[in-house]
Amino acid sequence: MTESAHDAASVYPRPQLQRADWTSLDGAWRFRFDDACEFTHPRQVPDWPLRITVPFPVESQASGIGDRGFHKACWYQREFDADARGGRILLHFGAVDYRAKVWVNGVHVVTHEGGHTPFHADITDALIDDGPQVVSVLVEDDPHDLTKPRGKQDWQLEPHSIWYPRTTGIWQTVWMERVERTYVQKIRWTPHVEGFAITLESRIVGDLEDSLAVEVEVSHLGRLLAQDRYRVIDGEVDRRIILSDPGIDDYRNELLWSPERPQLLDARIRLLRDGEVIDEFTSYTALRSISVLRDRVMLNGRPYMLKMVLDQGYWPDTLLAAPDDEALRRDVELAKAMGFNGVRKHQKIECPRYLYWADRLGLLVWEEMPSAYRFTRTAIKRLVKEWSEVIERDYSHPCVIMWVPFNESWGVPELTNVGAQQHAVAALYHLTKTLDNSRPVIGNDGWESSATDVIGIHDYDPNTEHLRQRYGPEVSPQQLFDRRRPGGRVLTLDGYPHRGQPIVLTEFGGIAFDKKPQEGVSEIWGYSTASVEEEFATQFHALIETVTHTALFAGYCYTQFADTFQEANGLLTADREPKIPLERIAAAVKLSRTYIPGAA
Image 1: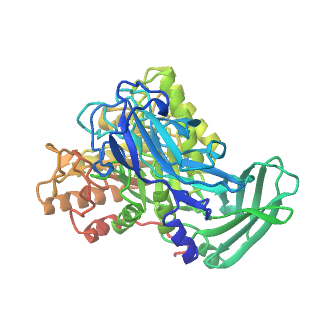
Image 2 (image 1 turned 90 degrees about the vertical axis):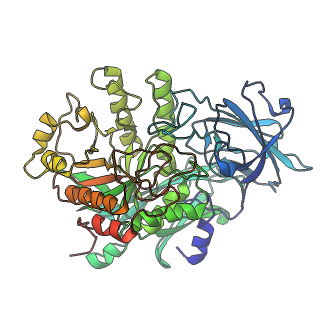
Image 3 (image 1 turned 180 degrees about the vertical axis):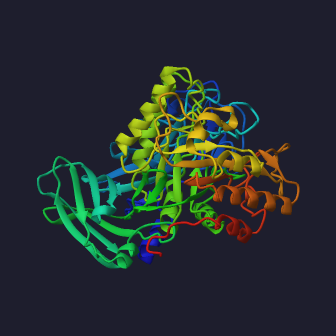
């Protein structure tokens, strides 16, 4: 990107569709709890006794509330200025947990269910001519409901085991933008490395006249690669942009995206009516392919060793919400500084700004759906709806290389003997492949695999000799799946034998070392413990070395990136201070070879 484009992206909430005319509504809002669920319309709310700082959740200290009790409902309200000037005003919410109902000037504009995905409303017709506009939001979030996808949010009053404080209400940015009456509502990029091409899909809404066209410019470091114009038909443009294939590997590889060379392609898109620009925005994409071939994960057509770290995306004072954009960037930089080439975002759908920095700086991301903890028809319908929205939101990010709808059989606890639960995992796997056939999918990570492209294994045995015996060179995959069952679970379900897919150790380690106790946390734990820095470093290095030299694995994911409340098994403290020097961590991680495109 050009420097000016980078400056805009540093604050813009939606990185891959950036318009100039937008306004943040983050900051101070009026607030009140509604534990008895008394009110159904903002006009019924008698008073606003509290103030909250959006977008930080109610339970966080940064919100100004810091109340971690049980609350079923709460209200938000603030004033704002808006002038459509003949166009349209769109109001956006990054994420609201769990069910949100929104009014503007007392007019209902949108209802959305799902705590991790964005939604918006065209509020033009609700605006008034004189005086400030007023937006009101009712949030319903039953803290005891285990049928909604909730990830690591605890249903008990105090965090216990591996569950953490709840997130209630608005926890990602609120913003609005002005568009013309006819505009591009969404775009989607699909790279085709084998054909040196990129598919652009766009949807246009408004007055769909025959004279509409979409113009696309794609460039790399200021060099124009393509400039095309396509006619809009039935409100859509779906075209493959063919780039000039340089043929020679050295130059061809300069355009391929990888963690080692995160080459982004800039895009400028204009919507034209009779040749006149009526909508314009910037975007970006990348040439990157991800697939599996026999027992290896393939990046850009070459075997690639995954060296990842599990990242839960919590901060002490802001919980699931990032403190600011710089904190998201810093997390990407720290993962790379520790030598990892990817993160497994665990039980969280991370803010798009994190994915932007992972795209720009070069870090692979596995996306995992936050789990529900009961198996009911309601839970599955909620999961299907929200997971579909997750895939739609993040499809175009080159950093995203794997989808994971289930983890450790959470929400489907009887997979070995309940057919309906087995069908649920298979259905989500096939739904994911239907919505995005360009990426691998793990149906259920950790154990009890069925429909899957990669088999993930979770094994927290701290004894490196046990790990060598279980996964060493003398052990064949057949032996592993037939006789050896880490964690006391079967690794594959009946009818789903290992078919040669890549095997990844997707959770291991978890060494607890409480270098800097977190305020308010009385007891800490991990899967093993270390009492001093050198002991921690020695154990970590031994685990990484053991796993690295196990040819059985196509990659690994170490637990975990940073301490998370009582779970003090991070490589960093909760406030991102390294427990041992970053150089020592990186030295261990870099023992394994990683394919670098273009390298000998």
